[in-house]
Image (cartoon, rainbow, N blue to C red; front, side, top):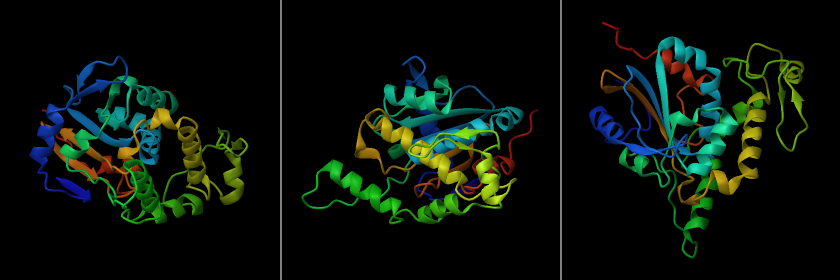
Amino acid sequence: MAVDTFTNNKTPAAVYEVLHQTRRQRVSDGADTALLINATKQLVLVWPQLGDFDSLEYAWWLRRGAEQLIQKGVVVRAVGIGDLNSGKAFCAYTGFPEESLLLDPDGTLHQELGLYPGLTLSVPGFNQRQNAWLNLLLMCAGIGSPGTLSEVFRGYLGDRNAPQLIADDDVVQATPLPPIKGEFFKRAGGKGFQRPFELATLRLRNMAEVLGKWTTYVPDVSHITQRGATYVIADGGVIYQHCDRNILGFATNMGNPLSFLEDVNFPTPV
């Protein structure tokens, strides 16, 4: 089994058992639903807060890679920290299907899986909310979140090893910037790869969306530092996992987050 970055004491069998037993509220109808379904190949995403940079950006890549997932016969299921309002807003904004998203309001599943909770510093005199914000700000500065700053800079500087993200005729609205047409990035750096400011603009758009609906996306700040994980399930077991160790670190290859699907050894149909 492939294992990337942050690891914990959970064996693949133990991880599968937790996922197999997990039931949570489904966004589409509010019903209590099993996380795993009867499918040969499943991509199971345990997202942090639904208003987190990582959750929104991951959903964008899934939409972009939808055809690849269909061709491989991979069914996607996700569970994120939030409530029903968070889930509805998240799906409306990202296009992620409501029937595929479950809710974990207090991050219990993340704890059961032993995922990285992020910084948990406690300053005397600070209440829980203040400590949560302090820990988040420190992580955004790279403290307790290795690789975050370099990933932020990559979003501004561009990456010739990553694909182009915005088509020339696309228009991106990233408040407070005016609408930006995709051909702007061609003039700034060329085409056929991730140009300077291209990814940063998409991230700014996500940030504007969340800040404009903050209490909807983040009903409880207690869990804003919690990180998530990616699991591939096949043949009744976990055959791939990536446990996040930092903000903007939801994949081994952030330039092309779904590239791991090319390396996973899916079982051959009988």
